[in-house]
Image 1 (cartoon, helix red, strand yellow):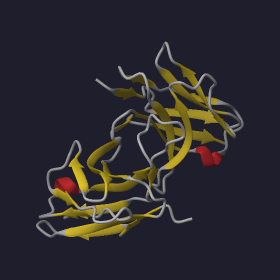
Image 2 (image 1 turned 60 degrees about the vertical axis):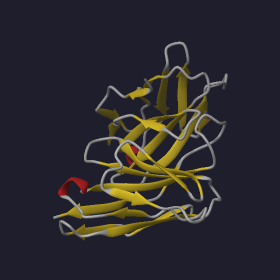
Image 3 (image 1 turned 30 degrees about the vertical axis):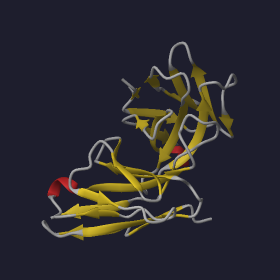
Length: 113
Length: 116
């Protein structure tokens, strides 16, 4: 069965520090994509970063990077130099060769001043 | 730079009323989706469409209907609203499947629906 697991319901990080949000996945498909989305308190879903299963290098987008460990089936999001505006809910998601995107239950990040 | 636009943003319905959530995208995406997000939960797929004239059920389709007459539009109809349908609804679209390089599912801003 295809599944995304985010085991951290809530996280705190000090401003300017780095934080890692965990995501593990389960699929028998060889081709899949992994996504991270940010949902601030205003509610919209903002795309952050994408990693393809065949991509050999970890994806990076500005302060966001994805630590992709295929053998361990993990796709952790690393946010460097946290800012107060990073406080939000973060969702990990997986897309496969079908219509279905699987979403995790999310991690709520609070950045402390 | 519209992307995915959904309306209304907020709506209060009485039990038994019906309404339509509108969704339109200007990215020429083939695939469109409706999700609901209950408090503290992830997203659950209600319906999806792989192109104009083609729709299919997701995980939680009961109480909803959709249509896809054009590539751009994918309205969601709630018939006989029930309190269990109180949720945040997201319309989304993607060019193709999520395993393809760079393919991303883009979301509208969400519609907050309360059934009382």
